[in-house]
Structures are given as C-alpha cells and as structure tokens.
Image 1 (spheres, rainbow, N blue to C red):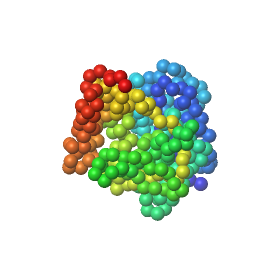
Image 2: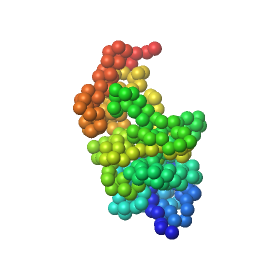
Image 3: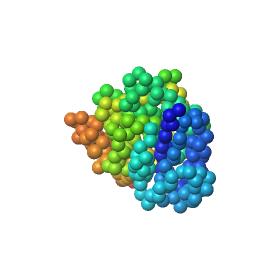
Image 4: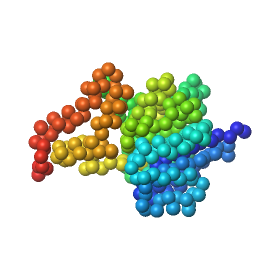
Length: 294
C-alpha cells in the first residue's frame, strides 16, 4: 500500500491552551495506517510557554521560532516554506484555535479524491467551521457576494455535497502536492488576513479550483470582536482609520497589491473604495474628531 504524507502547518502566538487543544484534535484524527502526518508549527514569539508545552506533549512537532511580528500570513508562510522542502503529497493549513472533528482530515482527503476522479485534480478543498456555542458558520469557503465587486466575498454555507468557491479562509485547507508546486507559498506582500484570500484566487488563476467539503469539519469561534473591527461605526473616524491601516485591518499597501492582482482593469477604484466609504461614513456620522456620546 502506497504511503501518503501530509504536512499540517499552523502558526501561533500566546494562546497555549488553544494551541494544545487544536493539536490534540489533530493527532486524534481517524486516519488509515498508510497516512503519515507531520506537523510544522511556528511559534511567533510567544511568552506564555507555548513552545515548551507543545514539545513536552507532542515532541514530534517541528517547531519553528518567530520574532513576534509575523502575524498569520507571515507565520503560515514560514511554516509552509519549511514543509515545501519535504515535498509531501498534501498540505493542510489549520488554525491553532480550530478544533477539528475526528473525521475532518479523512473528509478532506476523500473529497479531494472524488474531485480528482472527475478531472478536478488541480483543486484545493476547504473545510467550514462553526461556532462552538451557537453552531453558526464562522469560516470556510467564500463566493463573490455581488456581481459588480470582484473583491467582496461572503461565506458559503456547507451542504451535503462539495461546492465550488471563489476563494477561502485559511482555517482548514487541504492543498495537494500538484497545486502547491504550481502556486507556491503564501505571498509575503500580505501581513495577516488577506493572504489566504489571495492564495485561493491564485489557485484559480493557474487553472485550478477551490471546493468546500460537505458539512462542518470542526469548530472555531469568530476571531475579531466588533469593538476592535475597523468598520465599527461606533468608533471615531480617527480610530477607525488607525485600525484600518494596522496589520489586522486593511493596510493600504497590501490592499493595493490585492486589488491590482484580482480586481481587473478598474483595480484603482476598488482599491480606494473602502477608504472613501470610511471617510464618507465619518462625515455623515459627524465623527471626524472625538467620540459622540449616544
């Protein structure tokens, strides 16, 4: 029986308990004996003892140290880069706060195999996650939400069958060797949360496809709190603009790269659009300066 090798890659920073829980779920996957799972984990400057705890519990994990400034895209890019050197049969991206169901990896593999059997070998498959308390969809495959805006996406609700997507969140993604060789690593132009969207669109640019697997594959709570989000209308314009230009917001330089690459000939319009909306909303709301008490 031919052995399948899977490189599971993730990045973490100062959430030791969640990281250990996600690894516990990963190592409890119900896999056949012919599957070899290797884990590459970037610890991006944690000060809570994450590296020590992981190595004590899972000494087989390949730990890579970061300086604390990698964020999601940077950390995943470093881990992915190390895994690419081994050239495994598959790669799995997973978030360190995603708890996979026991059959998640098997479902990713079987879905890819069924797609490959019908001619979709250059595809990646995405798993949808739900909130552990509400059961509502949190991350997964994404489709263009409106005909006129090429950069506006919404989550796709999983069904009983695989569904095609335009792109995806990077919380749980299976990438076959063939696609990884075509597309390569995550783009260093991106800091935090745009790299996964870009990767999914790049897969489609080289003739590949993105598919959402049936049903949910695990749980993951929504990361950002409303009060921390740059589009929160209750913040002052100054605070919203500051959040928008930070790594976890919508930094203009990386958004420009994304728009130029994926928005077509009118990319300039789509690049400036969110910042124009931010300015107009501030003018309408009268929040150019200090917070208005309501």
